[in-house]
Length: 461
Image 1 (tube, helix red, strand yellow):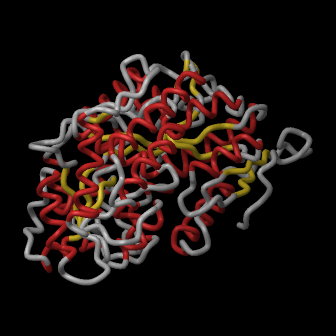
Image 2 (image 1 turned 135 degrees about the horizontal axis):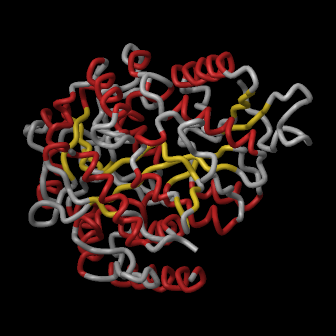
């Protein structure tokens, strides 16, 4: 059912070309009258409301809801929080299977296939226009394509990213490393990790995920850096049980057990690693620019400590890096009025320069980084892009020079594999195996993962 992967990858490569140039409520639809009351007022439920611990983000969200409803008195937004990450893959899958999604629900680009397979998504093609989303014609067509199946649009893109090496400048300096010249190869990462780990107990020179689908996600990114693939060209069989995949695991095994530079605590998920990073206990990890945003706004880190370089390669520049993003789907059987209301909300909250997530003037004095090089949602030269970039530059509260090496050394972006989240869950085991067992057999780990992924792809074909 999914769009062939080469098309997804091409879409994300196009993105790279363009860009680098109140209280939780029930998730059921609002009432028996299709979300519209006797007075014609439309109600929709929307997820990804910030959690209570994210005080400034939650205050911003609630203020946006209030202002949006003031401007649209015929629409009521009921907000639902599903956790600080918005989309925890296993939880997302469970809610999808149980039909407990909100009317307008957040998902990753990799979620398209399972959403379509579940029958939970609504075709919104006819509703996504300049009337409902004023900047719609400026939204990068490549991003729209990723959420399109057989000519039908199922979600509105609201963020995109590509990955590089995120590093702590303060720890680099403490270890005697050049904070303006991050490692460019995995051998250099290994040497830097040893020096950082030697600066104090409990500090991981390099840190890595291995649970909650995040390990497989990062295995994929590192495989791309080696020039490898996760699936073959037809998307039907695993392609990672080769020299590239083995090198990924060997690099980690060498750092983990050969150098003891990755710390003793493993099986890390998204929040675990970033919590450690915010506490100054992580020297390097691979991630997108918005990882620094989370470190600062959610995990009490400092803007000035964090910088980015490009994804490392094995013996030179990386051959590829993973790109992805997220958007909002619409639950099946919504009324046209609810769909239009949801699109208006997304337009206000996510796709209008100066509003919602792009309200940089509001974010500047808050504990929220402004000036990161991504997302890049709008096409080059469009009025929306010009306005968004001008606002970003005018309100920057981070040293944009910290991302210059990342921006000046673009790496070819490769899209996520078909059936990505299920594949990532399988690859978690290979990652956890090599990070928790000094005697782990890399060939065996990859062979087992290969067999399982082949079974997955055969079942889904």
